[in-house]
Image (cartoon, rainbow, N blue to C red; front, side, top):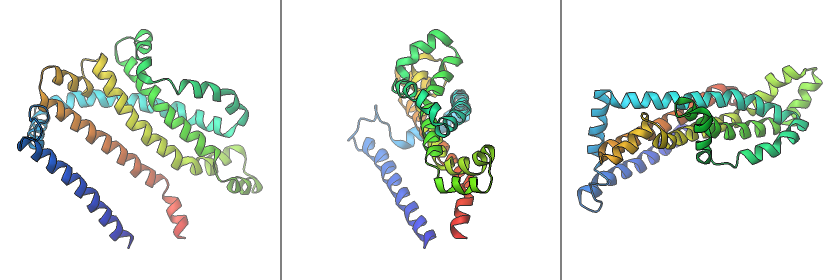
Length: 258
């Protein structure tokens, strides 16, 4: 029954996408939408394949991926250990919480001039922007995951003589992992969005630059091809993290069926 339900849900999801794509193709062709501003999907896909075959798209895609991955992995390195410390040690949490609550309210784009001043107009400023945006969802999700780990599991582990290190690696981290992975998904999507915005303002390469430059030159098909690429990138990253989460938390399903 579960397999049938998954197939039905998959068909529903695909049908919505097919309707959307059909409308995208039809509305410009019948004149309900100006084709100069929104070309038919088939024309955009043709441009997309031409950009792929010429290698132009891969150049901008690789540069954006490099920037987004750098900031995202730095966020992982910083946010997960810090989140564990804040979630586990109440005194430390009370000490740093006002600072976190203040800093996380600052929009990343408001800090873009600051990053440019301190890090210059090169790659570091864009990596810093991605790091700033990516670290907050990951940090807060890690804190919540650690803080709300089942206390019964902690008591059982304590009663069996588990030390702090064993408790952290065998109870806290596995229990907090679903929350951490949710934060990673939010951080990954936020990384791509803020990077595109930053590239539109202060870059000469990358998908964001490709979009804004195409708009300036009225290369509308190329602009939409870059937007489609960003959508596919975000879609792929999201489901890659979901797949990784299932692999890392496979023990929960095994425990549930045991």
